[in-house]
Image (cartoon, one colour):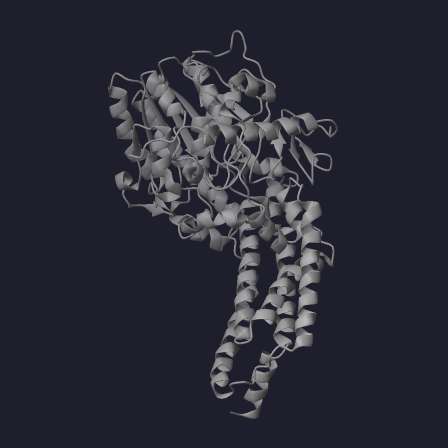
Length: 625
């Protein structure tokens, strides 16, 4: 063995791995912090992350007498993976990843295009050292066979030093974690604790949630918390009694698209026309979590909030869920839902059984021709759905169908042969531009479908509700050029309110157009539909309200915004560590920023979430079929 390789072996077998890997992980800590947090103090990543890193390194130094460098490399890989996951998850969801997200791993391959679209090339540099050091480690392993006994043993004095450093770093970890446990805002909590400490805290602090006794949860308690009362003579009550209900859930459709023109080109002419001819709610907001589209299906059809962790399809599919399909079936309706993806995606098959749909149509029905992203385009969705609606229309029963569009899915890179507009050069090869052209195509498909509904006489015999399922352009996913495009569109910086604002449009036969400014969310769709159809919800717990008849609303938000966030009729509130250091963002642009939200509303919003979680978790289990 050459003297140079012998020196290499000795160099890596000594104390230097502790220093080398510490430096590498400090650099990665700064990369993660700069990608996630705003205006970070220069020493924060060092002071928050290095104690956790050194705790793991001390364990290696104390217990590993052989293959020490291999263990350093493994720990380096694991911690690097946590930092990388934190960056990518934040870019997609705007929250800090936790171990709960492991349940989503089986969905990653399906959304790999979305993941790759958020991957800035420099993020991959976080793994370069692992590749290089892996090669070096292989060389060392070969040398070790020839140099048994070269690896130094841990002397007693070194053991004492390692034990002291371990105790000090563990104390620092606890010091970083303990005072910051009460923070409601997960981003603030992770920044105060450090990313690695926060991840450890979420695992170690996991405990059984306190559930409110289901017997104590009733509609009057919910309505009191929401600050609403049942109107004596509700407007629009039974205005569509006996009519069909068609709910069209539009993939990633945000409200700013309504009436948007770029260089004189209408982006969504179909939705613009609908908004001008129907009941249009411009102050309507998403209420989804990790499950995105499937969460929207759950919230709309149950009027419950999403669970605190994971998607609703992962938490509640085994429950006997009260739902809109079941409610309408009791009132003589046939029910069906349509989606061109495979029903196994996000465990939809089990959700559909729990919701009680009579039938569902997925990719087995729609086929695999003309596929974009996860399934056939919206052209295929609407074309093949139409004959089924005709069959349902021909029967003696009214029907309720939910149709889930999908073509305008993140990352919005539909083939250019589907383009129906040409955007200016500044929009080319940007996520904003791709989003706009995909929504333009999806809008054209919708227009074709609506014309067919009218030709077949279904439109005039139906209440048609349309809404966006969730945001399409998270502001934390956009680069500075894309944020500049959004500022050009809005005439001001793109905000959290803008991001979660989706349109809600109700086409009601025989009713003229109106713009209704009442604040609403997806949880309100079921009560609003029930009012229009003249169906009572007196025997069905619901956390939404009929937004045709309520001017005040209290909407707890989860996931895409920090825990404790909520909307009322005046503002969006986002907490800091608690309520008093939170921020409020007015819905109206009149310059008024004081006294728009209250701490009482904050506490009531948290209580509503607890009641919803408690009620659903204590529902009877359904029998598998």
